[in-house]
Structures are given as structure tokens and as C-alpha cells.
Image 1 (cartoon, helix red, strand yellow):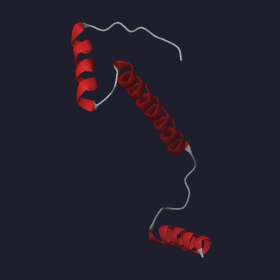
Image 2 (cartoon, one colour; image 1 turned 45 degrees about the horizontal axis):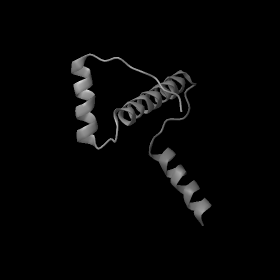
Image 3 (tube, helix red, strand yellow; image 1 turned 120 degrees about the vertical axis):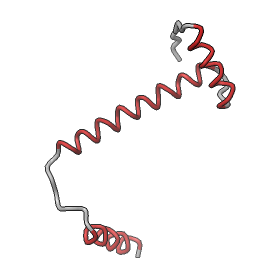
Image 4 (cartoon, one colour; image 1 turned 180 degrees about the horizontal axis):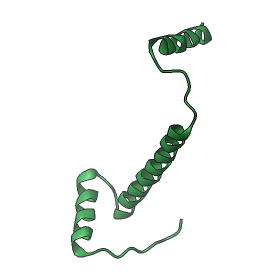
Length: 78
């Protein structure tokens, strides 16, 4: 695992220490890794949402669409 040093103002350092203590993280590094993972996941989700928004329209997702999905699930389970 690589090491990275981060400089924080005292107020942010206090905030990180408080979050570590209150949220049950073992170290400030664990807290920072979690924040980075969440940010990475958020960026991936944003990319997927933008790709979906830019894609061609398909049939509307109405009641019959969801019923056809249920039928497919029922047939694959049986």
C-alpha cells in the first residue's frame, strides 16, 4: 500500500478526528479511504446516469413493462 501525506488546517483535522471517533473508524486513514471510495463510486454512478440519459429512448417503463419483467423472472425461476 502506498502512503500519501495530506496537510489539513486545524479545523479540518479536528473534524476528521471527530468523525473517526464518532463513526467507529480505527484511524484517520480508514476514514479518508472511505471518503475516497464513496467519491469514486459517486463519479462512476454519475457517468452511468449521463450515459443512460444520452442513450436512445426505448419503450416506456409502464405497468405492462414491469409485468413483462415479472413474467420473465417467473419463467426463469420455474
